[in-house]
Length: 210
Ligand code: AMP
Image (cartoon, rainbow, N blue to C red; front, side, top):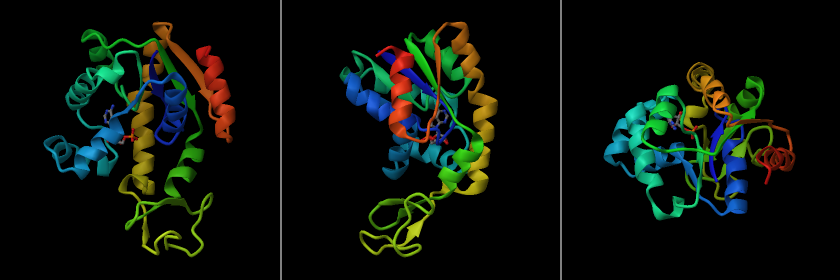
């Protein structure tokens, strides 16, 4: 199965993609993860992408198309894949079609902006060991201090309130029109994100008839 996950940043695409990936035995390709790894490894792609990622802006379409073309040519993608975070613009979706990257289903995970803001803005990570927390839903024992290693907790640049709001605006302006694009092709399935991950997964399975 070749599947595209659509949805706002923080909507739960990655979580559901991980479940589907395991169930269907196909890889999840997250362009966000590929870009973050490139920044960390200080590659040429990372050097271009860093300022966009930090600002919560979309990286240029041609960079995404290069990344996708290269990644999807790997042998593990031969029997299908889940695209988490791409395409994110009409140009990306149109170009994918033109270069022969076709998909069978597009799953849109729907969730209110306010819920996303609360989730993302409360996230913290340990700068020493990378452990993750949430100030409301998974707080550390001591404010700002990692339970696991005593390191200092910080907020990812792109989880800061102004950046989260910008990312949501960009989602509504640039990515949401893809729902119509794929609906016209008969590929769109829509699922409301429920508070329990398992509930959402159940609805995802139903929507995809698996
Ligand atoms: P994500 O982890 O999917 O939320 O992506 C993190 C960041 O990577 C985004 O805020 C963008 O800066 C960049 N990014 C990831 N995928 C794309 C894409 N398909 N098009 C443009 N930018 C992207």
